Length: 412
Image (cartoon, rainbow, N blue to C red; front, side, top):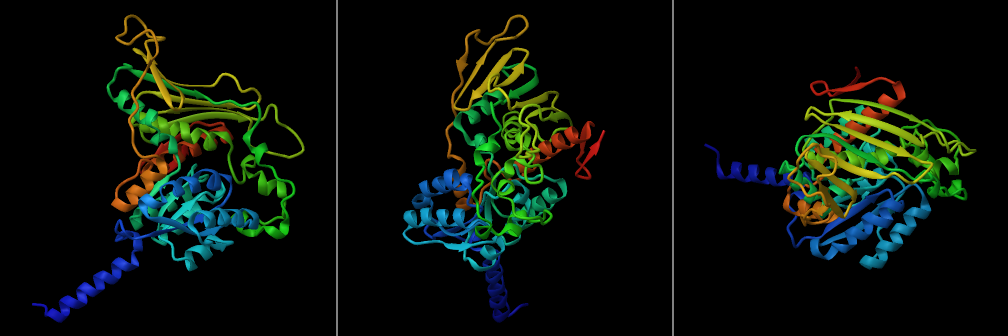
């Protein structure tokens, strides 16, 4: 039998292990949690930061550290936080510095898309609960590594596909479960615009001395500093793959959320640039078409055209009727397009919302209560696999399939 001394040693060791696993494991509702930010661009400053501030008192959180390779963005974010919380957060050029030096409990990631998996994996290995923007990944191997790190370290991870937390979309999910649409065979979205969104981010006056260029490039090859590459990264395939992962991730994540489907079994796609050819040299396509096939017996179609902003829609089509999700705050159903008699109304009927916390509050609530958030790492992995399949299909001209056993995407 063990002695009392042995018991005390065991208890002390368990307590030390708990402490090493991170503050968020044992934080009570009255304990303040410190948040660090990785990436201080427009998405962070315009959406994530204000949402965190909205719930700062309710969940007793505070932003205490910011990291960004661009001095201007870093200082702007720090200034906003100082106005909200009464003291300036620590500023870091690199996410590594933040994780090594800042005493933070949670991390929000809104870095460029080519760095999401790098940052997510590092944060997970540091055992910090995390909010990570979408698309979760550009490449398959880093996606698997980041996913495995999140799972291995037991952190709360919310992925930034915030539409699945919208009341109308939660209502759409509940309505879909009733089967009132009948047999669903096709889901589609056309999301068009007159001009690619990446043009709106261009800042040709960014100064090299204000940027840690190597930190921004990450794993990408070094080359001379270019303010167009730096500010307009959304339009370059090295850093982003354009509309299919940036916009289509929201769509395919909603397909998964509403229908309950997971990873698609196959995908075909095409993309090209037809209109926006100019001296900037953007190589993300301005025209893309994707079809994903699911074991559930339906196909999901997505297209984007940058050249004319008309023709937008988002429909779930069943043989008894159609669900119209084009307005993210108001979802309608009707018998439109059904063959023969349908129990649904010929007129469009708005379905009921299902209210719940918004996406950031859901994350903070799940951190406090150690629960699974709306867009957990499984949801993030699923949408990332779908968009990576799409880009591979478009780049190769070959149908792509996903092998669940090996977690590989293969040519059909």
